[in-house]
Every structure is written in structure tokens, then in C-alpha cells.
Amino acid sequence: MNTRRTCLIALACLAGAGSAWAQTPFPHKTLSLIVPYAPGGPTDAMSRTLANAIQPILGQTMIVENKAGAGANIGADYVARAPADGYTLLFGTSAPLAINVNLYQKINYDPVKSFSPIIQVGYLPNVLVVHPSVPAKSVKELIAYVKANPGKLSFASSGSGASSHLAGVLFNMRAGTDIQHIPYKGTGPALNDLLGGQVAMSFTDVLTALPHIKAGKLRVLGVTSATRSRALPEVLTLMEQGVKDFDASVFFGIVAPAGTPQDVVAKLNTAFTQVLQQPDVKQRLAEQGLEPPPQYTPAQLAGYMRSETAKWREVIKVSGAKAD
Image (cartoon, rainbow, N blue to C red; front, side, top):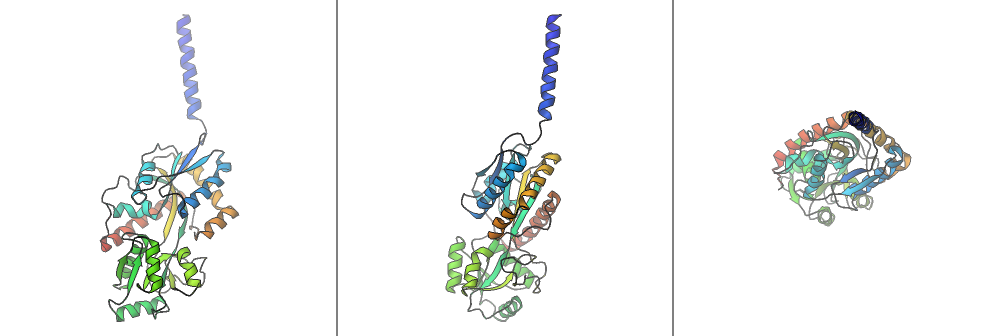
């Protein structure tokens, strides 16, 4: 009898412990924010700003882990395979969240199917800049000049399949032009040749271009995002200048593994939304050229990832770009 009673008591204790564990509020341990790029870059800096600011809100430590390689695929795949409990998150860009699935021949995750979107942090506009020797003073004039002088101008990019390459392909598609692409091995070499006049134009991020625009070494013709850049508020977007359906920005978003419970997604979204409303965080992100998204909801990011994936699929198909 005593043995039977002891077993019943033990089972009751185990059941109670299991119930208490299941009801442990999220989060109850350290969280990891995976950055699929090397330390020291802009994405890394943004992630550390967010991780530091969210810790008091969640009441737990959030560490930043850099898992770079394969064009951000290593870090993204790591998160896609992580437990769907909200403790491992990806701070991704357009590359792992929309472009790479269309660009790489072998990829182990699908941005739409493998992740639970948490929040879009913002987007970084590119600008269309030309060497001062190019006579065009507007996008309309550039299109007219290119069509009147076929084969004369070319655009530089940081590499085949890079956002600066795909923006140029999208421009050709939307504007009806045929500007030749010149790929470089990185932004630095492309910028150097643009400044030297060896190549006529480029689509580059606003922060990289800004000092050269202010120095008169480059002429900015337009902003590639759907809305104007706060860094260059007087510069019209390409869509404002008649290039329809042109939006070639780099977006930043936070996602969790697919299947993460909705209450966990909601709590993370609420916490990150609070972080993104903090004046010091807003200032730091603005200093890095980031523009705020139209909304901070998981549904907004999910829809944007789907539309961006579809858009870049079409562009990459036209470009012929492939990556191993």
C-alpha cells in the first residue's frame, strides 16, 4: 500500500512539474539574434542596437551571434532548423528573406515557408547616381539619352546577383532601356571606377553615395525606394519621375523558425515595436540610412516577403544571374 501511495504521489508531482514547465512565461532564458553576416558591418551594428535595447523589455539577455557565409544562407539555414520556440531569431536582409531562394542553385530553406515573420525593422534605399560627365539631370533625361545613344552607358554593381545589379536589371525592365551591366568584386571597386568615370552610373546605397554627392563627384538622379529618403528629402523617387512599379530597396526583418507559437510571435513583435519607437534607437537607425516600414506587424512583413520574393524571381530570371 505504501509503495502504491508513494508512486501515486510521485506521478502527481511529475505531472505538476510538467504543467508548471509548460506554463513558464516566455521568455525565461537567453535569446539569440543570428546575423548572417560578419561582425562590423551595418547589419551587425543594427542588430546590436536592437538586442541591447530589447533586453530590459523582455527581462532576458539577447546575444548577437554572427553566422556568415554563402551570401547569408548559412545563418538563415541555421535559424530555419532551430527549435520553433522563439529563442533563436534571424536578423535578415532582402538577400536571405527574398532574393537568395531565386538566386542560389542549392538552398536548404524557403523564406516564405521556413520562417515565422516577427517584424520589419526598416529598409535602406538605393540611389541612382551618375558620373558628372553624363549629361542627364533627371531620370527622364537619362532614359532619353540612353535610348538615343544605345550601348554608350553601362552601370556598375558590386557583383552579379547583388542588389545593385538587380536594381539595374529592374530599371531596364521598367524603363525599356538596355544599359550594360559591369559587375565588380565589391562596392569599393565599383565606386572607384564610377568616381573615375570608367563606368557611367550605379545603383548604390544612400550612405555610400551621400558624401560623393555632396562633394559634387556624383550626381544623384533619383531614389529607388517607394518613398523619398530622409537623407535626401529633395530627391524624387524613380516612381515620381515616371518609372512605374520601381522599388529596389534593401529591407531588414526579424523572423523566427516556422511554427513558432503565435503568442510568442506577438510578444516579440510588441517588444521590438517598443524598441523601434525609442528616440535613441530611431536616431541610430536613421544615421545608418534606414527608413521605417509602413507598419510593424508580422502580417506586414509576411506580405512584403512574399511580394519581394516574387518580384526578384522575375528580375533574376531576366538577368540570368546564378550563384552556387
